[in-house]
Length: 309
Image 1 (spheres, rainbow, N blue to C red):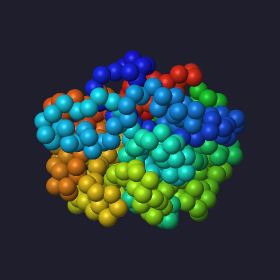
Image 2 (image 1 turned 90 degrees about the vertical axis):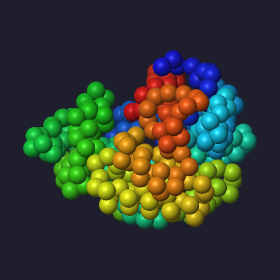
Image 3 (image 1 turned 135 degrees about the vertical axis):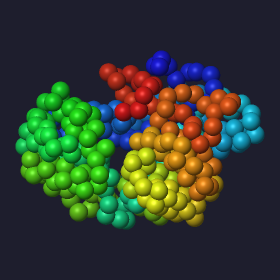
Image 4 (image 1 turned 30 degrees about the vertical axis):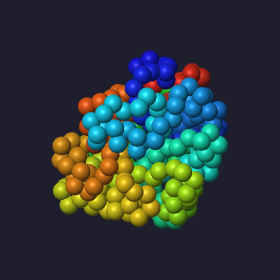
């Protein structure tokens, strides 16, 4: 994809974290920065300057339902319900008269204790006390490597162990996290969820300043890997929870994982739209439950738009 954000059609832009570019363990960039899922405030300001008219997601939903061409401009979407979405991002947007949709996993919240598996993995890497680690893989193999150089840490952030972690069962994920913690001499603080995520009352605070809150499942699993019963809970419970705060409820597929079965459950649960991680610009004829997005990430001081990290 071209680096410019100035394109015709409706661009649904996907963001995750907004963090200072401060060094983590061993003086290296933090995992979110290495993976391209964190912008600084200055970088986000630049995106907003370049994005053209900011339009609400509801305008795209309405146009597609009416079989009309969606409006020209950019829709802003932020995934995973991080603390800074209320503390930093929403005030920036409000000052510009702009709005965004913030997708939250309803079981990962600041007034709870659960932490998403990727957030836990990244926290351990970013706070490691030792410069190497060994982790057993779900296939029975072992991954060994250093985490005190940028090149080798990158393998942990986006290479084979991260890929295996996302594809693993919950029990396998717990074993991998335990092994990483043991290897790195690191433990997760008991209040990590509070440090990372919005509390449930913060969802309403976002709505009250003109933002929209959407559902992103309960625990952020890959929905395609779930049984029918598990899928119904992850989709239905999260949409019902968010409906009490922000309706109609927009949905985002965790990790962009969806198929016909998942789309059917999201439709049955009453979602007004659903965004994917597929690359594209929303135009007439796009299905409202399969909306494409453009991933915005920093790269060598410039912003790129393309595939999700």
